[in-house]
Length: 402
Image 1 (tube, rainbow, N blue to C red):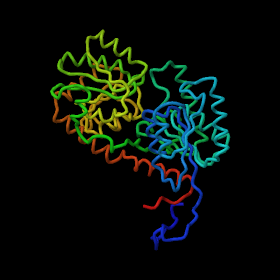
Image 2: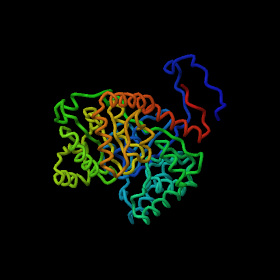
Image 3: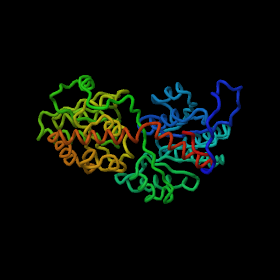
Image 4: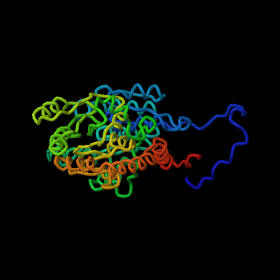
C-alpha cells in the first residue's frame, strides 16, 4: 500500500483540538528463548523503540535475567513462561500450550520470534492460532560444524519446519542471511538484513582511561581483552591459549575477560597450567564501557551471528581481532575495520592480536573506521525504523510519517 498519499501538515497542534479517537494499536508479541545477552538486548531495544501510538508490544521467554525488569519499567508487557528452558525438554509441550493460550487470549496481530527454540515454539503456536503476521529474526544458527552430526541434523530440521508459516525473515548480518538461505531455513529472496543495534549513548567514542583504571591495569601495559558469556560458543579456552602464545612475543601484554559463565573455572585452570595470567571480572552490566579501556578487543567465538560485544567495541573505536565465523566478516573487514583469524586456531588469533599491537597507528585507524561504520548504521532508531517498515509492509500500511 505504498502508493497511499502522505498526510498533509496539521493545521493545529493536537492539544488545540477536541479529543480524537485513533485506530487500534497493532499488538506485537516477541517470543525469545533467552531474554538476555545479544539477542535479548536487541529484542528489548526493538520492543522499547517502536512507536507506542502504533504498537502495543509484549515479550515472552525463558524466565530470569536482568532485562525483564528493564522491559517492564519501559512499559513493555512481559510474560516469563514457566517451564521454558534453553534446551529441548519434555516440558516444551506445556510451554507451547501456554504460548497458544496467551496468543489466543490477547489476539496478537504480529508474532515476532527470535532464536532457534523461541522461533520454533513461537511460530508453531502462531500457526495453531492463525496469527495474521509471523516474523522471525535469525540472530545466529543453533547448529554448527563442531556439533555431533546427528544433533546438527536434528537442530537444522527443527529450524526448517516453521519456514512455511513465516511471512518475513530478518537476519542481523548479510553472511548470516546467506547461510540461512543455503541451509534452506528461508526461501531465496525473502531474508531482509536488519543490523542489530546497540545503545550508542552509553558507549565511549574512543579509548577511555577511566575504564582502563577500573579494570585495574596501568596505561603503559598493552591490554588485550574480550567481553561476553564464558561458554562453549565463545571459545574462552582459545582466548587463554591465544594469550599464552602472545606472551612469547609480547611478554608485557596483559589479558582480561569481562563476563561470567559455566566455563569460568576451566579458564582459570587452563591459565594456571599455561602460566599466563587472565583476569576475570565476572558479570558487569557496564561491560560495553569497560571494553573502551582495551588496546585490542578479541572475539574467539566458534560461531556468532554478529556479536553484540563486537559491535560495542567498534563503537568505541577499539582495534579488533576476531574469528572469521558467520556474520563477523561483515563487520570486521581485514585492513579496514580489524583483522580476522581462523576459528579454533589460537596461534592464528595471537598473530592477529600481535600485529595490531605492533602497528598501533594502523590499528587505531581501523578502530576509527569501525566506529564510523557502527555509529552510522547500528543505532536503535535505524533498527526500529526497518522493523516498523517490515511490519507495515506485511500489514498493508503506508510508511510512517517522517
